[in-house]
Each structure stands twice: as structure tokens, then as C-alpha cells.
Length: 208
Ligand code: HEC
Ligand code: HEC
Image 1 (cartoon, rainbow, N blue to C red):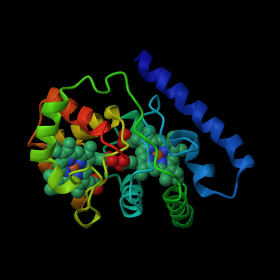
Image 2: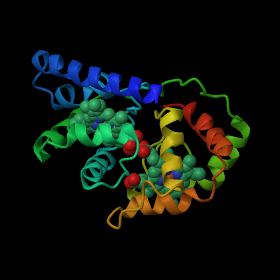
Image 3: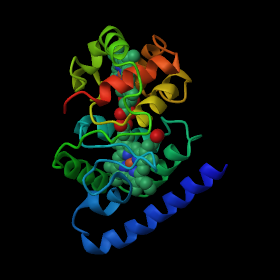
């Protein structure tokens, strides 16, 4: 509960910071609407649970934004609620301008979490190659034709949390979420949190 309060305080601080950002650079939809949580560089914010956006394709990001609005991610997590309410009042033009601005940001490396690379990298590599690379690519850079996002650049906390959500049916449950449903089915291939952590420890150290 103390953690939740701290997170809520951080979220309020981030939203307040956003208000001052608006006056500095109102021209860029990303700076105006997203940077207070995902960072000026797009590299994300571990404390808020806001992921690095700079490795993600425009088509993946646009689909996720529609998905947040349509309730494709279960709102039980404060992180999901935070993101859903952050864009709730933004119209399609502002959102597509933000997506275009993200595409212009240089790639940022994955942030190191407390647990980053504490996993078994050799086992993570074997599991990744066997169960993930067919869709997310040998180098982790994703495959838009399959709807599979790049995983390179994501921090291991975010990756582990999202993976768990697929396993638990908290993401990929909505009838219209075609790609989410695919990933939810696939997530059942590896359910042990230790093994998932091995995979994310391997993925975060892949070159960008
Ligand atoms: C108040 C903080 C906040 C603001 C403002 C915000 N986000 Fe987020 N965003 C988050 C958090 C926290 C998450 C993680 C959500 C989750 O875990 O379900 C997230 C997740 C995302 C994701 C999912 C990434 C993935 O890998 O699937 C995308 C895309 C995204 N945000 C884009 C944006 C864009 C574009 C804007 C501006 C129009 C924006 N966000 C504004 C906090 C924010
Ligand atoms: C059959 C293809 C397929 C396989 C195999 C697959 N995935 Fe996915 N994965 C997807 C698709 C498609 C999405 C996008 C889901 C969406 O749009 O919400 C996804 C999304 C994800 C996400 C969410 C990323 C984000 O930015 O929020 C993570 C994490 C992930 N996959 C990890 C894995 C891991 C780890 C494995 C191996 C154990 C794996 N996936 C195997 C297709 C696949």
C-alpha cells in the first residue's frame, strides 16, 4: 500500500511537470502530452513504469494507443490506469502527431532495473530462441507483418510485467485485440517467472 501511494504521488508529480512542459514547447505533441512520463528522450521512466518508446514501430504504437482507449489492457494496474487516463481526452490528430514525433527520436538503450541481468543469460538465450524469436526476431527487433513489437530497449520490469499480464489473461483478452490474443496464447509456452526473467535479462542486453 505504501508503494502504491508513492507511485500515485509520482504520477501526480509527473502530470504537474507536464503542465510546465506545455508552455516551454507547445509545438511538439510528444513533448506536450507524453514526455512528462516517457521522458524527453523517450527512454521511459522506471519509477512510473512508463516504458521506452523509441524502439517501437509507428504501427505498433498506434495500435496500442487505440487499445488503451478501447480497454484492451485490464485497468487493475496503476500503470495501466495512468496511461489510459493520460490519453483519454486526446483526439486522433494529437495522438498521431505524437506518434510521428516518437518516430523521429533516436533509439535509447534499455534502462537498467534493480534486477537487470541477474537472470541466467545462457538459459534466457535458449528459451528466447526456441519460443520467442520466430515472431520477435533473432535480434529482438520485432516483425510488423506479424504484429510483434521490438523488445529491444524495453526494461526488464516492464517486459516481465506485461508477460505476466498475458499469462494471466489481463492483456490479450479483448475480442478485437487480434495480436494481443496471439501473444496471450504464446505466453503459455513459458509460465515460470524465473524463466521469464532469464529471457528478459537476455533481451535487455541485446544490441540496439
Ligand atoms: C502520466 C504518465 C503517462 C503519460 C502522460 C503518457 N504515458 Fe504512455 N505509458 C505510461 C505508463 C505508466 C505505461 C505502462 C502501461 C502499462 O503497464 O500497461 C505507458 C505505456 C505506453 C505505451 C505501451 C508501450 C508498449 O510497449 O506496449 C505506449 C505506446 C505509450 N505509453 C505511448 C504514450 C504516448 C504516445 C503518450 C502521449 C500521447 C503517452 N504514452 C503519455 C505513462 C504515461
Ligand atoms: C506467434 C508470435 C509470437 C511469439 C512466438 C511470441 N510473441 Fe510476444 N508478442 C507477439 C505479438 C503479436 C505481440 C503484440 C501484442 C499486442 O499487440 O498487444 C507480442 C507482444 C509481446 C510483449 C509486449 C511488448 C510491449 O511492448 O508491451 C512482450 C513482453 C512479449 N511479446 C514477449 C514475448 C516473449 C518473451 C516470447 C517468448 C517466450 C514471445 N513474446 C513470443 C507475438 C509473439
